[in-house]
Image (tube, rainbow, N blue to C red):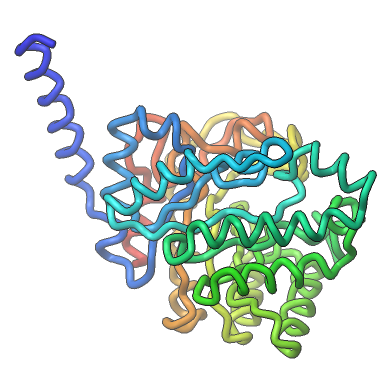
Amino acid sequence: MNRSYLFLLCFVITQSIAQNNSVTSLKSKANFPIGSSIRFVPFMKDTKLKGLQQHHFDSYTAGSDMKMYQIAPKPGVFRWERVDSIVAYTKKNNQRLFGHTLIWHNATPKWIEKKAKKDPAWLEGFMKNYIQTYIKKYKGIVHGWDVVNEGLNTKGAGFRTESIWYKTMGQSYIEKAFRYAHEADPNAVLFYNDFNIERDTLKFNTMMKMVEDFQQRDVPISGIGFQMHIRMDIPNEIIAYTLKRAADTGLQIHLSEVDIIFNTHDDSKGGGIQRYNTVTPEMLRSQAKKYAELVQMYQDIVPKDQQYGITFWGFNDRDTWINRFFKMKDWPCIYDEALQPKPAFYGFLNAL
């Protein structure tokens, strides 16, 4: 590498860092952890994105790198390399590492489903070994876990009965997952995590009945994760109602996957409904107000010692999962496609 190229590279990096640091850091203004999901491999190649992540966030959630299909891709194999790299990154940057997720129907490898169908009794033993091997390896390093993710129906009351976990073990798989996780690390904060519980009261009530039953029977649940993938038209009153009832349990409350969309979808892959093809300044101002109101509700409703934090599911419109998953164009994040802060960023910041 010649000197002129090295000088230019250093100049670009310095300018990038300076630009990142010219905007007030979110974590510097918050009284609770502020996080974002990250896809580790593309993230580590993007200097500007890393600079922004280090500047704004003190909590790290893996987008997909810690899910079962990554950790146990085939029988008898555990792959820890990616998680070890994430651990090294979060330690170096003094960030809390949050484990997402242990048991999720969509992250279950096909080989596990096939084996469970042939030998149903095998699945519980596998689940216990998987959870406890994983948690023990990172005991005292991973601060908290989404133990079970999306175990309820997509809409309305009831449990996701088509899941291989429910089909094979019944509803008790959720309770057993929490017990096995707690045995492996009694100090880890253990969450049940789901979407639409902030607005679908039938779904919310199913979750609350389960949580309250767990508390009565000393099942070691310590938190509720509201994914909070919300639309602009979701009434604040219903969000406030569900947050208040959840907080009344005394458990930790995590807004775990926050983004706010303008368009809509049917909650299925490819199910986007493109109501808006472009975004206007007025729309962006309204989104900023919605972000601010969400932060304010969290601070006003959830007692300080129950505020586990707010985590964005990706923080920029360039990389948002919304466009890929729902096959539509939207602008749900606090940074835009050029990695510049949006009005939503300043709405969120000012509310802190």
